[in-house]
View (cartoon, rainbow, N blue to C red):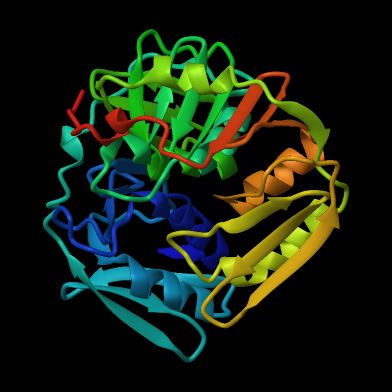
Length: 345
């Protein structure tokens, strides 16, 4: 069969959120093809998308994506022969080992039956609160986004963000931040909730399913911090430019991309540090309190300074609140309950 290389590449790239570099489940590092669809599944995220290949089997994702990116042909001849997926172009041929038997346990993912339009602000809410979740896999709650009928929130125990909206979710659920974050760039327009999964769909029929959990979440304690009152001031103009420069280095810390904000009387310092170096910049601010410092995701700080430049500062907190979004960062842990053990929904 003849396929368009760029079309195939785009279809494969849309399902990469479901891949795992480690074999957490069988064939979780593979693209699995069946019934004119390509599937991926890593136990937390499952992806399904129509594909132009009419084949059945599993192919190693890393080598398949890499070779498609390096080839230059507009169209490729594709066939399955002797346990290999063969790609033929102009004077070149590629053979990729293909497993005929499908072992990927995608049947464990609930099948959505009814779809509902995704609330207008849902993606914006994910975009903002995701940066407040943490990365420590030993502390389950801080790695999640908490979704309620009227808002969603996240906290890494030192910062918290809450976005108020009608989510369309009936009861309290938790979803891993690293699962939900993918919908921000995938133009999702519909969702469906099943017993153990939250599903999203876009106009190209990509379905991304995120495992959900039922677990107590310390919402009342977080609400207390969001009610903090302090001295009102404004974040200085130009912070975004300073953050962009600091992130050149902080982004080298893939698992912990944060910049440090240091507040002193009359000035604020933004600093980003990475493996290869560091950058810092000082700006003037109307602040007369005690010295304080906190870490924050550079993308979130840039967004706050552009859209919510008014803030309140206490001796140990910085709060930004405007419209539907509230954000607080503190110097001490918010609540010990955030270290509770996970429980599958």
